[in-house]
Length: 235
Image (cartoon, rainbow, N blue to C red; front, side):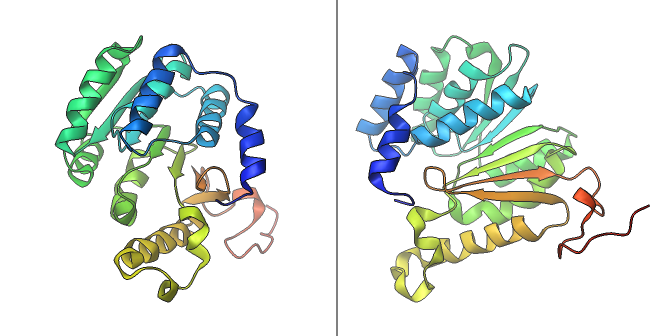
């Protein structure tokens, strides 16, 4: 828990109810212990979709289809979603779930390893102004070069679960050995997002931690500052 449980419950209690089909899908996923986006992350996604009005969404990590179904409910009418999943058992469930949602015709599920799918999408010249990543945490750094190609200038990359229940601040030696690789790779990923010239990134303690990264339109003069925060000369 990144913030106090009492405060978290208060924030979640303010949220409006989901449409019935989404609520049922969420409850099934939770009963089956399938990790899905938390209420706080849902609220953030809904807000960003309303604010940014994207025409194309890319999701890396479909699982059973809840987050794709959720975004389809709140995205603009003209928008489409492409979502990626590689686990066969989850693919079967996602296909069934996504086929029954109101906007099924606007969601495309691509099956396969995200590294391969992302590479193919980039080579085909696709771009997505709104990318949501909630996949295998240890692979985020491998995905990042493809995501940078797929993200147009001004586009946003949202990454979920980056603070790992707050343990990201701990020394790797305090982390169970089986979890150390993911721990170190997530720290590397968050550091990379914060220090890449191509991106401007904020880390938010929302849910299990979310990063919002915008691809710069001018990587050398964003907000008039360079990466060290030094004021650039006025031109």
